[in-house]
Length: 226
Image 1 (cartoon, rainbow, N blue to C red):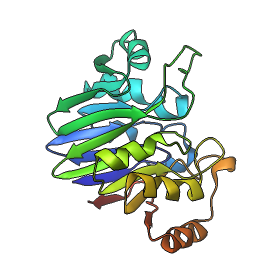
Image 2: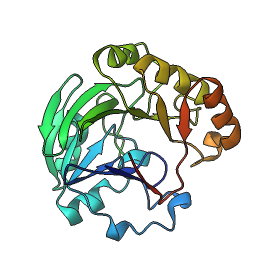
Image 3: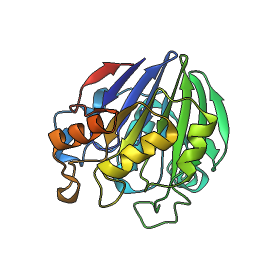
Image 4: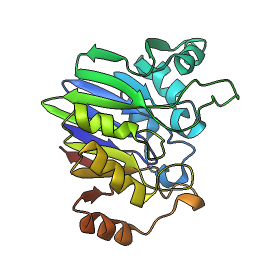
């Protein structure tokens, strides 16, 4: 499977014959100015919560592609009113089987509201099983003991974790989260986009190495095979 990074917390997973877009926020991310949003295709759009820096391009891409949305019931209800396909309206603990694999919605410790201030329900993350691999997309979250449940119930190949601090976990807590979830590899997200989130890349990689973890920091627009 392939994973492309579009900046902040936005990734495109290509697996099981599907294109799965996570938390699209590109047009208003100055670091992603070279990404052509009009060329991004998606069969599914997964939304971890309602904040603008995670749903900013969901309406545009969803309308153009006809993608099925998956996310918290309140978030999807808001997008359904805008004419999007709010097909997989979920809540914590729910699991759905999709053409590319299984998606389980898990807890995140973060707030959630929609861009107009509407209530966004609870923030969430996802555990995804596809093509014989299992990974955790944490969304925005603090370090929480709920992550130990993920490690007890799943064998992760990697985890996509926020590392920028300030609004979410920083590098130190993300490394603990990787331990608790059992993830040997971290793909970093939610860093560098705004001044409070700027990190020292080399220091972060050194910390990860010292903790016995691999930290991958993708360039915006970069695609890797996992």
